[in-house]
Image 1 (cartoon, rainbow, N blue to C red):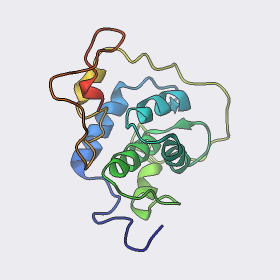
Image 2: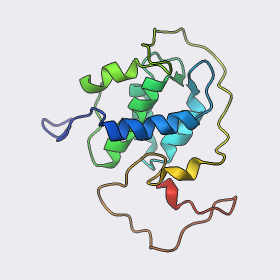
Image 3: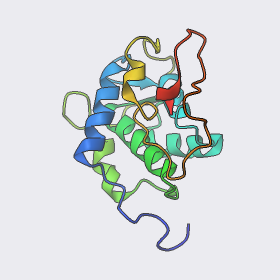
Length: 166
């Protein structure tokens, strides 16, 4: 990581970013206030970042390494992915601005470390309401415009346009 290349604006969440990510969190299927790794990686895949970067973001986000994300860890995942899409270099460790965020829980408290567990949450259904997030599940458009041709949206299996997926 080169000096000065990390962050012109910092890694912290703006109120607008927090609101967007919290709205998305509210639509996730949770078990005991957590979402499964499978569900989190499904959302992270919508960032269209390379697999290696998605894995690095997962490692930084899952602070307690329990293969599931609390609300705070999910906010961290979304922020890291969003800023990476804006060409920020990924950090090798969790940025100081995001450390307190990672501890937040669904009920507004702070998470305590939990032992690793097996199994997943109730699952992610990808159902109605997911295309309401524009810009790709809470991810802003990348700094460089894509070469996607305007007006030619790709259709998903359900026949819906995936323009909102980023």
